[in-house]
Length: 379
Image (cartoon, rainbow, N blue to C red; front, side):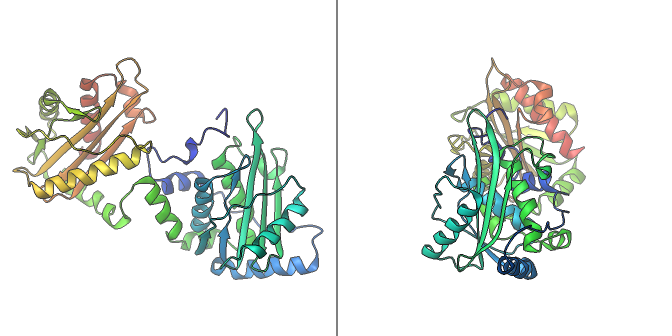
């Protein structure tokens, strides 16, 4: 990431749920013992020990995290979900940003305490963090402060790329610095491997799902079993193929014809072409590709429920491609059963190996990729 101040792609769930992204980054990151803080006053040490003793039951407000001087709600949410995954159960996201002056860490901590006194929190503690740097240098400093409900300082920390705990980072970008922050803070909150194992998705996970456009977990949980049932029903099951949507504003009847031919040649199922052409209305304007996919899935599910197919399954695809640039495009498709229940909801773009292997620059190559993906699910 050449410019972590500008490039926020670490926080965009493009190809998978954000919670999955975070888990992939953070598994094994938090087996770190709490480091004693040298030179702190006895009364602050007592406050720190009390916070550790509360463990997962402590409640925490995360004040808006500042990235290169500006508050970023996405970064704040990421820190929240990371702490939730480590077992902290009671997390609130602060709405009012704290705007610090240029000051050392000790003065910063006192200023955060004064801010909490004038902007009361409903939780036991408040966390303020800032990721500092510039356009030329990138991120190069993490500063964090925890105060209690009265504004008294509980914990402070400062990290730079030269510090020992930071040297394991492959790069200083918003995601890795968030991981570092939670890695440093978790032991101070009494969080460890055992609390992480016992952690359950909560408010922060729900926020991430809403950001990504994912439906609730209970709506997604049945997909593996439905895919298994479809696989067992093949190759005799029938699949109704609708003309794919191209570029968000037209459909391709030849695309349906070609898909049916490819699917039948592959022996996957008894594919039949729909004589009905539908142009779903799901917008492509949202930059969150995963959200666009699930919006399409919801719309197609509703269509199938209203118009039950004379087949075991129904398929609708959504293509975007650039004939001059295979890096610009995607292939989405949705398979529903005759009841309108989701069976497969799939996303492919230039970040995925299957997409890269085909080099999507035409509708025909989109068709090829779809069949390859479907084979992966069903063979």
